[in-house]
Length: 126
Image 1 (cartoon, one colour):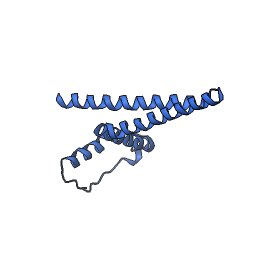
Image 2 (image 1 turned 180 degrees about the vertical axis):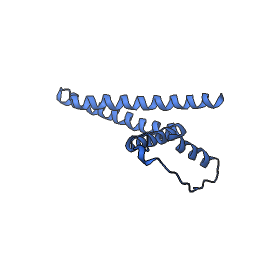
Image 3 (image 1 turned 90 degrees about the vertical axis):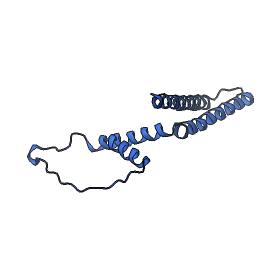
């Protein structure tokens, strides 16, 4: 059902009018389940497709800015670790791991944002 979200977003971008039309539907109640997908997995699929569409629309806003925050946090933890090491001559592994984790997450987010921009530009050209 992620397609319905995509259709609604594209229609709203083109300033199309969206209305609800009532309809009726009868299911064969004797057959048991009327749905082919569990409601929780279906809902998560719709949410993930909505997030994908949002990130595809503005990758720098939703991936680039958080990547800068993560990179800043990683550098901050790294400097803090170096300060602790300079004063106490002990390596604080939890601070070092936080520095490494935030830095890696920041690089992954930034590379994904840049890659998304180039993929979108190449897709629109063809």
